[in-house]
Length: 101
Image 1: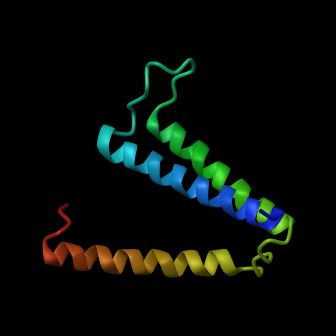
Image 2: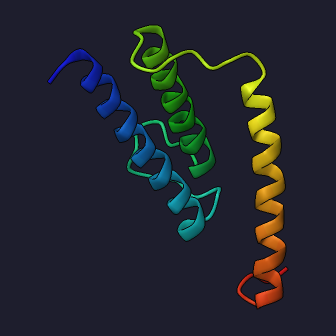
Image 3: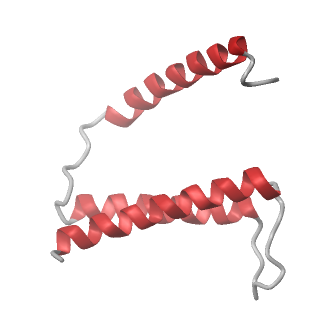
């Protein structure tokens, strides 16, 4: 494995951890925690930790030139587009009856 591949694999692992944390929020609720842990953290705290880990992986990939730096203003523009797109599809799902208030 190359160093580039290592950083990509670590980011993939963190994506899976974010998915796992979000799934636990859906299944067990945001305030649930594992009492067997020495320092129990609720599911929201775990999600925030995993999200932070993923962001660090992305930063490291950029720092080590695995991926290019994002152009200035890209994130704000892309997030605004994603916001609108998610709202559009949420409304559509509500119309189809697959999402309830």
